[in-house]
Length: 157
Image 1: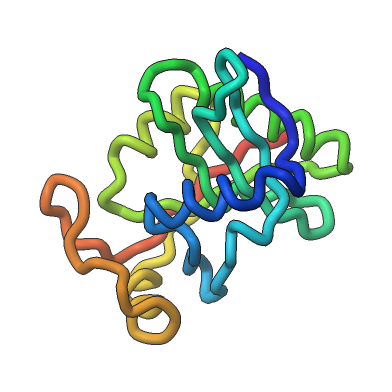
Image 2 (image 1 turned 180 degrees about the vertical axis):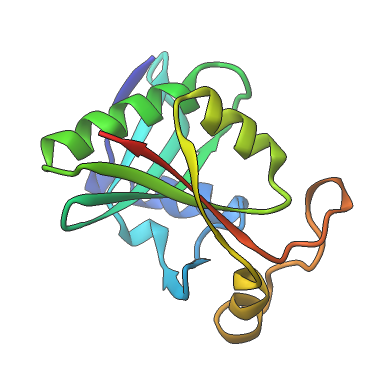
């Protein structure tokens, strides 16, 4: 597994990959992000991209905005998290964090197994984002759980 920064030549692939996963626009903590415009890391296997992480650095904090893999259980997500933590440390960040929704049990398991800890709950934040920023956010998510709240996870660097 090789992880490298997104380059200009990758932009079309990044845009398509994120659009396929309904992540061309991401509403979190009252903001709307455009992940194709953010810095990112690509995980490759045999020269082919199989995963992507996009992020945003603000001061001494690095927010993981999106993380997607084409192939489950291939190690791309773990490799991307490790590489992003190193990138964030090199940029002087003290904390790596992300936001997920209350229905996303898969993500909660994945991130906690990689050392991230729950750090905040924003009750009703997804309801508000759906109303004001991104109306296409579904009302029901994984396992038929209503999507209402944001959960923040963090890793101290």
